[in-house]
Amino acid sequence: MILLLATEGGLLKGLGYVLGWMVTLVVIVAATVLVTGGKPLIPHSNPSTGVLALKLSIGVVLVFIAYRRWGSWGTSEPKGQPKWMRGIDRVNPLSAAGLAFLLQPWVLVTAGVATITEAKLSSTAQYVAVFAFCVWCTASYLVMETYAALRPEKVKSMLAALLGWITSHRDQVIVMLSLGLGLYLMAKSIYGLVSVG
Image 1: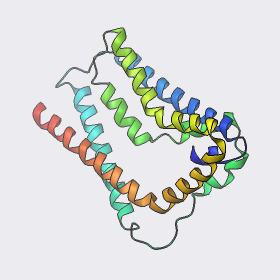
Image 2 (image 1 turned 90 degrees about the vertical axis):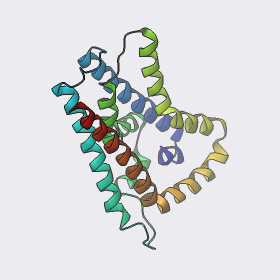
Image 3 (image 1 turned 90 degrees about the horizontal axis):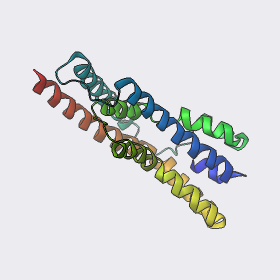
């Protein structure tokens, strides 16, 4: 999103990205709710145990990602942009929406889906709350897009500085977020699996 906003025509590209991101979340949540019927999985059943095992596996994957990145944390070499980011100037709003789909944090989305399968959605207010969660997950992008529309001249220098910071601290952020969320998912899943038995 930061890269898209910094390019020529960044507002439209950013809008495409925000809409693509939000539509992806809404479709995933809606599909999950349709499959489960808005009812939580029956405790101590094979599907609920499977969801706990899936969350445990996701936690292990996140801790493994943190472990793999930990080794490159202290390198003094400046980090460059990933190869896919170099052609960002040629992106149009529709392909930005496609990027939003591709760049979803799929491990975290899977953890979210596993959590939704445990939810009991029986009223309109609860469905609105799930939709509001999707909006909340998109809020940082909405704020960036709005700020870029209101203060385009200031945003360009801020985005350049932010991109520089993200590029130089990418490994630390990935390690901390992956490790924290991975350990949380593992602990919660292990507790659920132990209390099932």
